[in-house]
Structures are given as C-alpha cells and as structure tokens.
Amino acid sequence: MSEIAQVPLEKIDNYRWRIPKSYKPGMRVPGIIYADEKLLKDIRQDKALEQVANVAFLPGIVNASLAMPDIHWGYGPSIGAVFATDPDADGVITPAGVGFDVNCGIRLLKTNFQYEDIKDKIKDLVYALFNDIPSGLGSKGDIRVSAKEEREILVNGSKWAVENGYGTQEDLECTEEYGAIQGADPQAVSDRAYERGKAQSGTLGSGNHFLEIQVIDQLYGRDICDELGLTLGQITIMIHSGSRGLGYQVCDDYTRSMIHCLQKYNINVPDRQLACAPVNSPEGKAYLGAMKCAANYAWANRQCLMYLTRQVFERVFGMSWQKMGMDLIYDVAHNIAKIEKHVINGKEKTLCIHRKGATRAFPPGHPALPDRYKKTGQPVIIPGDMGRNSYLLVGTQKAMEETFGSTCHGAGRLMSRTAATKSINLDALLKELESKGIMVKASGRGTIVEEAPAAYKDVNEVVDVVHNAGISKRVCRMRPLGVIKG
Amino acid sequence: MDNYELIEHTADIGIRVKADNLDDLFKNAALAMFDIMAKRQTPTIAGQTQIEIKQKADDLEELFVNWLNELLCLSATKELIFCAFQINKLDENTLKAIAIGSNIKNYRVNTEIKAATYHQLKLKNDESGWQAEVIFDV
Image (cartoon, rainbow over all chains, first blue to last red; front, side):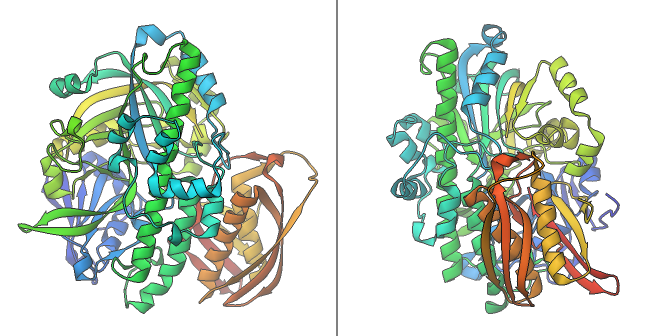
C-alpha cells in the first residue's frame, strides 16, 4: 500500500491504543484499537484506522468506536469493528456496520476421533465433502425449499432445520441466539432478496468461506477443556459460511434506502457507505427486522451444512454421527447487529451493538448462555488461515466491561487479493501446504491463492492480544488437516 | 480486458475505469466487474438472454452503484454472466439499459462479488474523459 495512514494514536496500555476525539471535528467519541506494537505496524499500512475514526461520527455512539486486533480496511467501518449506539439518544443502525454477508459466522464440531484414527482417511473425507457440499459462486443446494418454507427459515432459523430432520435440539442450544434471533420480519425482506436466497440453503459460498477438518494441537485452559470434552490430538470440524445472496440483497436494499435517510434525519457521516437511520425510525426498524431474517437464514444454512458434513462422515466411516461424537460445540455470528443490555456508567442500557468481523464473547453466568456454558463462558471460535491455526476461546467479564461483550473474529487480511495473486504461486503453495500435512480442495481457481496464509496476519498474534488484553480466554488451538474452500 | 485497472485494497477488490463518455463508463465498469467474476470458457456463446434495466437515483454516484448492484442481483437470480450492454438513456438521475448475458455454466468462475460499495467511490469528468473508482465487497 502506498498511502500510510497518519492517524494519531495514544498508547493506553500494551494492548490498547486511542484515536483522540480531537482527531477529526465531528467525532463524537474516541476510537480504541486492541493491538500490540507489532500488529499496529500492519494496521497502519491501510485505511482501517481512518475508518475507526469515521465510525465515531455516528449519532448516539456510546463510549468509543472499537477495533479488534484483526482489524483491516473494509467499506464503511473497518472489518474488526465493534460499536454500540443508544436508541434512546437518537442512536443509529447502519447496514455497513453488519456487512453484506449478514451473520457470516462459524461453527465448531467435535468428534470422538483421534488423529491416529483418521489420518489415512483425510483424503477420502476431503473429496467426499467437496463432492457433497455445494460451494462456489452461485452454487445451489440439494436442500430445496418452497417459498413458504423460506419464510419459515427467515423466522425460525436453525429451528426450521431441526424440525425438518437436519439436526437436534442440542444443536440449537449450542448456537448463538439458539439459532433463531427473535423479531425477524419477513415483510421487510424484498422479493428479490427472497429470490436471491431461494436456491442457496445448504451451500457454503465462495471467497473466504470454508469447511475444515482439524486436530487439536495445544490445550490452554485444562479445566474448560475437560468441561467441553476436548483433548490433545482430537479431531474437530469447522464450518464458515453466511447468509449468501439473501444477506447481500438485504444489505443492498437498505443501504439504498438509508442513503436517503442521511438527509432526512440530518446525519453527517464522512463516508456514504455509512448510510444509517435511527434505530427507532421506521427505516431502522425495517432494516433490523430484515437483517434478523438474513441472520436466521445463515444459522439454518450452517445447520444444513453441518447435517451434510455428518452424513459424509457416516458414509465414510459406516457409523452414525452420534456414535462418532459429532456434537456441535458452538456457533457464533461475526457480522451482525444486536439489541443487547449493557452497563454504561453504572446504569443498565439497551443498546444496538454492531459487530462487523467481530464475535460476541459473553462471560460465565450471562443469561443469554445455555446452562452447559454458564460455568465456562460462551465459546468463541476464531478461524485462522488455511495454513496456520484456529482457536477456541471463551468470553470474559472484561469483554462485558470494555468491548460490549465482544472479541476478534479471525486472522484479518494483510495482503490484497490482487497482491496475493501476483506474488503467490498456486503449485508452490499447494506443495507447501501438503508438506505441512494439509490437503486443500477449492471450487474457485483464484480462491486458494487469494486466501493463502501469506495474505493473512498470523492468527496466533491476534489471539495473543485478545487473551492478554483479557477480552477472551484461550481454551485450545487447532491445526488444519483438510480444507474445502468455496 | 484492458480498459480497467485494479486498485489495491486489503480485503476487497477495487477498480479504476476510464471512458470517453458516460455511457461507456457505465458499460466498462460493468464489463470489468463481470471480468473479475468469471472468464468465458468457450470462444462463442449460445443462448444469450437480454434483460431490460431501469434505475432512478438522486445523483450520478448513486445511479452508478445502483446499476452495478442491480446487475449483480440479476446475475445471481438468473444465473447469468453479463458480457454486453446497451445504454438507451443515461443522465444524472435515470438509466435505461439492456444487459446481455449467458448462463454461468459457460464461464469459469474466479470469485464472487457480493456488492459494489460507496466507500471511496469517485466519478469524475475532465479533459481526458470520464473516470470512475469503485470498491467491491468480495
């Protein structure tokens, strides 16, 4: 990148940096970035910090415009942005604070297998998964739904999937919002959004979406690992996908309408992509109702993807998924806006929390958690790139106090897709991955190179920061064995 | 295609497009977008579909973004990759055009584009002609 951002930063402590409110006239709150000095050097290479400052312009923003250590340049807010607005103080909601892929998120399953049990089957599994799970641009699923059913999916999310035989009640307990966020309004979803989503249930999508077979290679919190039934050498599966075309269209429809709200509600923002409307306005309410539909669609989609994954394992190993212990650990959204209760200056407030490339990280005892995670805190799943590690963490009280119960969502990009395509050789990359014992199959030719490990920050460094800053706690680390990319 | 260049962006893809007139600017931007998404597999393509597009907007920037997003939506729902465009009417607020495309099966897909964004969007007209910069969410 040629332009280097000259955004002023004040050091708060080893893991937090402040963009003072005085940086730009119009900022209502300061920006706070979670990073160490090393990551900060990378962060300064693009325009992400400028975007953190831009978010601080939004009406009703509370405390600070926050950025997680995996922050990178996006559109509107950066990726890795967390911010809360107060609906009672004309606080706004912006589709750009959620992103086009509404409820892009990730789920982690465990198995009873140890690495030794399946090491000779990885290739079979990767081919079978690649074959059975529709992926790539415009891919269509085998799980076809009628118009009436699609409406049900938008309201009931994963619950629809479970009622139709694609999972169990336990799966719902282990999903953020129990797989169906309340208040979804199908009337607020346009016909074309319906149409764009119709054929895509049970499809992985393209770009950075993936399905990965992994092995646990490091345990941190022994007590929590015992509680979750996780051991060294155990095989896990990670599924990363979102709301596909339906979510893109919801975001597009409401960005179109909210561009006009800037004038209507006299809102001044430095980037038109930050188009927004008061949470309590008709436009704000309609967006929230439509966004929740897309979020539920995404949860149903990941539930269907998990169902297909379980089926593939059943076929390859000739036993039931229950016998293989393929239980869901948890499913988290990392592109979403939520109405949540948080304590601000000693008072409980109902706020609109935007997490764009950020994960909810609720602490032990939080009422939103199912009983099984009341003691441990909410599982937080952090995927890395296809050549390095992924992590399981849990939420903390400090996240509640500092980051509206939020943490990072992944490694964060370092290199542009074009730069990656220019500098990385596909054959050399595949050889390198193979030498590390990682097998990759992708539907888009460009995807493997664009998503190469060198294009990403080191997830280990990102997770170090959130752990050391105390906004989540490391539980265990996984490394990839087989990867299916969209 | 040589009438666009890529702009470096960490997470997404941006393009810079040039044209002698506004009609061609809209056409070239759309051609560039589909060129990034997919490459034709066969030299000739049978079974082309024509779709009429009408857009209204408050200003030219909004019209430009709406045009590209409209094409992405149609591409997804009709399973088409668009390869030619005919602009019938274009001013600050109105666009009438025909998009010509063929089934995605005739193409080798590179990457999905989710949407065109307003972030750092630039449209300008000077003595050297029209130029647009737009960042796509991929």
